[in-house]
Length: 373
Ligand code: SAM
Ligand code: DTB
Ligand code: SF4
Image (cartoon, rainbow, N blue to C red; front, side, top):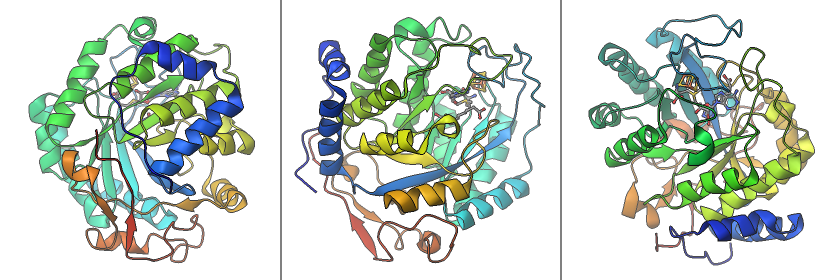
């Protein structure tokens, strides 16, 4: 690994737009340099998604098949039973995932629902997986409750720039989202926050979304960059498709602005060629959703990913220490076996269908990180 550059929180729009305007190869070279300064270059973190409550959502997000306002033919499902969620987590772990993300089509969860979900989090943790949830808006008390249940990450996306946001969602504000992110961070949870490319936004909107993320007081630990999955019945069905190179550019700029974050190549992989995905990894993506389903739409099957990882020499990254936050993280030694005895077995060897683990069975993975956050 080469020496890490300082992590900045004072990016200017002009600088971000200048990155987007670089020749493609110059941008990728810069992103790859940053990537190698902060991460193991051939390791990819793997999260599996499960929709624990599907459809019937009162919000009007124009991209989303789960909104009650659009006729997408999606069947609604009530909140799942805890035992069924646990079974899915066991299968995800067996397939090689290290993090399990539970998604619910809520505007915000109710107390009764949060009590059940807290139990799901405890069960998923006991399987030996990192936990993530995405349940809509949270109050500070709800975020604390989830932290108390052992939640590691909370996913809440800004989706797009503050300026374009109103074209996509009218039922909650950008500030509502920032408030939830603040509650999540204050509760000591790790933040997973990103957006969607391909909703008809301009390059400036992409730059502005990444600018907001990069200038947060602390960068999100995970930054999911989704390519819009066009679902018939949603208002965004039929939007002009994004040029794959422009999608790769968004990944590269996210990598440069937020050097320590895991940038996740998220929704949209099923429609991407292997070559486009390889360019995303070269641009600094080091996380994926793994397993044949996202929430309600498809994702590449495990076999396709296994072959892709093999062809590219990529390895599955092992689970991180669950309890480090803030200042601790700046010097964190990323442990696997010590804190998460159950995650040790999450390797290619134990699960022949899973992409190979990144440290080949070593006890610890050390990550060099700049201390200036
Ligand atoms: N209801 C919760 C919320 O919106 O906060 C959690 C689930 S919601 C499905 C999580 C995120 O998935 C959205 O913020 C959006 O970024 C992403 N998403 C939803 N539908 C998508 C689609 N069709 N294509 C790409 N990303 C999508
Ligand atoms: C995120 O940024 N992408 C995921 C996760 N966070 C929850 C969701 C993608 C959903 C794609 C459409 C669907 O499957 O319903
Ligand atoms: Fe509801 Fe979340 Fe879909 Fe928006 S993105 S409609 S809040 S499930």
